[in-house]
Amino acid sequence: MSDDVGARLRALRSLRGISQRELAKRCGVTHSSLSLIEQGKVSPSVSSLKKILDAIPISVGDFFTMDLESRDQVFYSADELTDIGSGDVIYKLVGANRASRALSFMIETYPAGSDTGREMIAHQGEEAGVVLEGEIEITIGAETRVLGPGEAYYFDTNVPHRFRNPSKVACRLVSCCTPAKTF
Image 1 (cartoon, helix red, strand yellow):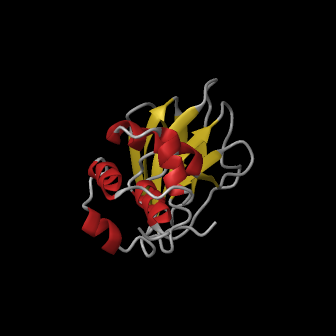
Image 2 (cartoon, helix red, strand yellow):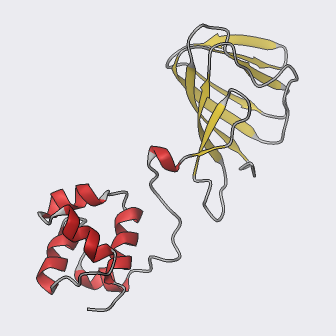
């Protein structure tokens, strides 16, 4: 087996969003053995490699011919989301490391009493979101509304807007906007 088996396996596992522990559990190989393979310290037998790849699933042939280098990351764990917020507001951006993004997709957290600032914001594009927990007051132009869990918004971001959490509990929402912002 070539020396890059471990690196290829680690890249494929990450691309598929599978943890080492999960893959070890799926294929019946110990976590430590899988770790040693990925580090290149142990070379797996063909049968062991097939057993591991069957759990992903991918064929041995596809494993060695698949282009793993040129692909953007597809899955992200919670700790891989980049916080691009400022002040009290937290903006966890999904896909910050992608070579090119057509949109910004975020999980936003507004602690009690926080806001995007006194000044209204305006920029080119569109924005949409849905409230997961808590409440958020959104002002878009001359309209203001407080949204709760399950409620959503969609607007042209050329219109001045502002977000504020007037409640005593944090608000979490998921949003996306175009074009992708460069932070």
